[in-house]
Length: 398
Image 1 (spheres, rainbow, N blue to C red):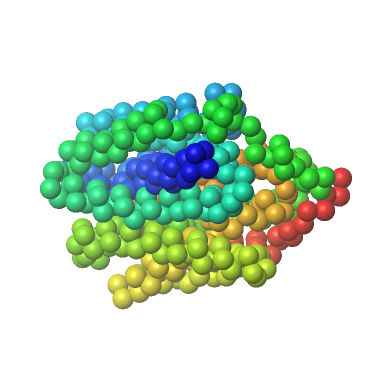
Image 2 (cartoon, rainbow, N blue to C red; image 1 turned 180 degrees about the horizontal axis):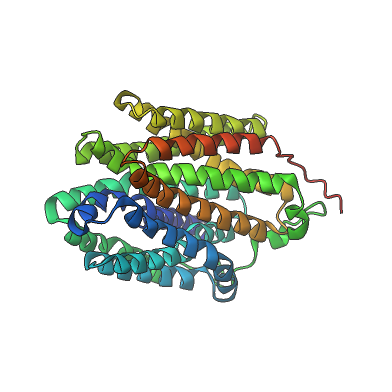
């Protein structure tokens, strides 16, 4: 019975990432036009909200890990979905820029309490065999959120107005809250969650301090920061950029969904290639695809926008998986939580800056995306250079 029930847990974990990412990051850009029209903010002021989200998520992630170890994943998820419901209620009643930043502080906590780490820990606890496959399926949830929630938000805005749209979307975290309360269990015997790495450490695993001394760690950190800067900056401004080019709200929404649909395929295809080809080469191929997308985007030509969207998403989908896989293969599992946690802090900072500074540069550059999209190209060139520092090894010199 427990063998079958773990697939229910897997489905809920995947839905958790879909909802937390879709409602905190990728699904809210379709509301931007309505917010700008009603409140008169500039894009830099509006997009600073995402800097608040990612900065807070990065800062509290290490502390949340301690709480998860003590109370279990389920209780943390319950808090996360309850807070997401409250945040969306406040979003629908928004009255000022300060209110906006408070709501996004809540969403930063949601990303930690109902996001990647809790989903991966939950699935890893229930799956001993087929763990890699289970985690891969779970990570698909992040892309699904980017496909589903922009479409849902646009339909609700068109039919109900933007404030009521937030109220209607509150139903989703309420459903997830109930599923978590009545269905989710921390582990098959319902005991406390045990660290996954406890049974899988190897003598050649790196310690945290030892990993920090390697070029590989800093190469991965730079790649994470620069690529998160570009992809989150691109997805956050794509909707408004499409509207600036004269496209309809629905077409702009379809572009956002297309980016994450491409990412979905990228995860599967590049993940498969990583099992059969040198992982470093596959990672570099991902960066080249993203760079091609950035160059197309920076040219500001309407005829190139769809190619840019597909290239960005496709390359990012594989890179998102390969960053974590390369870290694990390079350093082992003994200090994986701390190593990946540190990289998470850095990529969260990069993502927040990417969304915010793209808006600031748009306003300061005469309301043009020429400069901020050019920065994307520079960021990805930096990531490509850093990729040559990667030296995957499991031979610990200490």
